[in-house]
Image 1 (cartoon, rainbow, N blue to C red):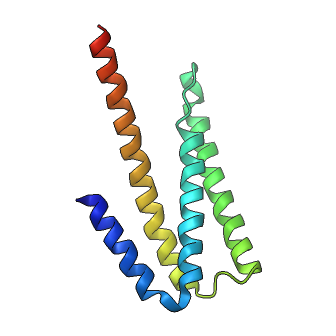
Image 2: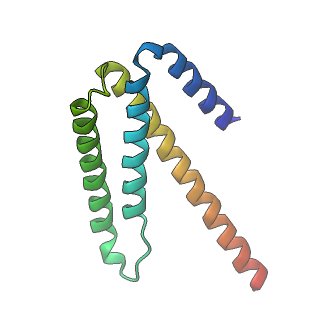
Length: 120
């Protein structure tokens, strides 16, 4: 149900931003890439728990870096022609991508737990 709601809101937002669709898609792309890079860096498994804080900080810095580079690239290539549409799209898809990555992680951890219990 939640995924249907997210899909419907995304489609309605895309239709409403029809004149500025490139800005909408740039917000989607930059947000998805930034959250993906931050997730990939921040949730690496390591033997040393002392590195957890460093990994979280590197994920944060990577997200900020990807966002800045994405905005600079979009403005330079004149893809972002409406900063408001881009900002709203970035905000929405940043929340959606974060939610999706955490749901994926929750699913993966539950599968690992199920496999451990089955083998025990």
